[in-house]
Amino acid sequence: MSYLPTKEHLDHQIPHFFQQVNALICSFQAETGADDAAVAVMLGRLAEKYQQRPIHQDGFGFR
Image 1 (cartoon, one colour):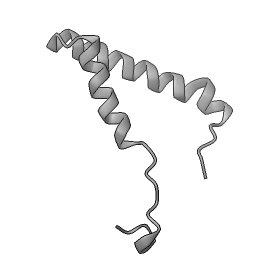
Image 2: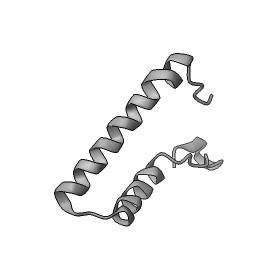
Image 3: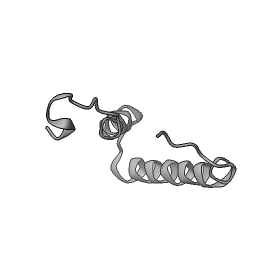
């Protein structure tokens, strides 16, 4: 079942989360000198972790 955000999530928690993430990225860039391209690569790798993986038919998804 997919996540369905509540009004509270949409109005407060999600925007607050992204404000925190943005502040963290800006701080990281200021401290390290990483440019937007480097941050984009890191975020892309992180996003890969959260991509849905197809369930293998054999082994009932345990392989």
